[in-house]
Image (cartoon, rainbow, N blue to C red; front, side, top):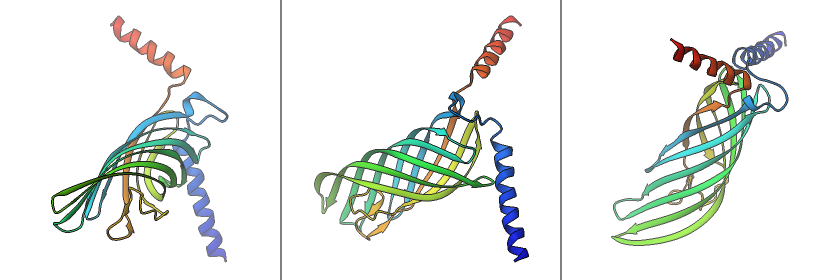
Length: 207
């Protein structure tokens, strides 16, 4: 029991220490400098590949919690032997939550609703179809988060809905495709930061 208590204490200390080290810029209540903008790159490989871009905007609600809205533009290929190939172009968006649990690690969940244009090529014959589906991506990742300045993250997620029309679902082998994302985010400057930057520009001009 004493060992369990010690481990719990160490975990709690790690969480608190992480919050103190990384989140000195956090301001309670609604503050402009808690808002951030940025984009990520989306990639995946499983009998084909996924490439995409994910612009996003969010808000650091607490020292541990980010809420935001992400969009996605993906191009996906899936191959089933030499006679059957799939090509997908997707457009989607949805809210996400990112919880920073300890040190530089986080868990995340994102709901998306995706619109897909699919092209299947079978023995040289093309068939085009359009469909839509929800996705719920869950996973975890690693990053650096300095509220009031910037964020960097890398994450791996899977779609747990198992919807065959999901762009993250392999319709040939009936498995969820792992999704890798990495991105850079930048917080909006506070009034004090804008004034300081303006002073620095004026000083450089005066030299």
